[in-house]
Length: 331
Image 1 (cartoon, rainbow, N blue to C red):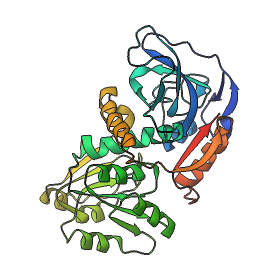
Image 2: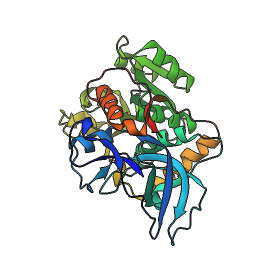
Image 3: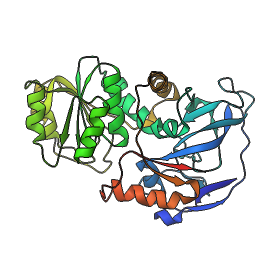
């Protein structure tokens, strides 16, 4: 099979489209013919060496995938040949990735693709959807009627936070950087969409919540402003952080404990397969109910993985502003 591989971490150009042996599924593994792989910032961090993980050599990049089961190991009981599946957690912690013609991995990381859901949508929702769900529900216990705030409402995780909040009857406040993105978030049901370039975000949040504050703050920024955030949280509010590995911002301890707040941090790939399956079951249910819209920003060929990595880095690290939605790769 062909795969996007690297021998040593570095710039996007270390990735090359080359031959690799097609794996054979063992025990509880399934072999998937890749229809779509999706790219996430963590993939670029691992490729560059910014995030240190033990990597097989050569290493196939990519976390997310959707496709069809081609073969199953002897202990597999959740899938059969021909099933459409989606999943994440590949290309991490020593596992080979998804930017290849085939992926062989444990069935515990995969889920059935609902009828009516495209492979593009299923691959693009994987890591960001599970991440959003873990933060909102497992960590922060979001309930119907509560109010959520998230920066970057058209980003990968942000777009899922907005839509998941609405799916359970919560209110969603988000920020974006253009009038076009305002309209997009509004089309997903966001209750208040603010342009961070022109709006006074704290003032508008206080106005919307009648000075009570938001119940859940889902922080996607790498350098959180805890002073601003804690002021905008309601009594007994919850905040989740899941980005900014090197960040060491000032933290206002007094206001935090006086308001009875809670701060939760997590990395999606540390969640157990059972914990992640709870997220996937809800995502599949919302797909079936037509409650989810998955923005696809740009599509590359699998053989163009280096260009896809470069494009994503331009938008996540250099803030080029040329991406709305996910980057996906297809054969």
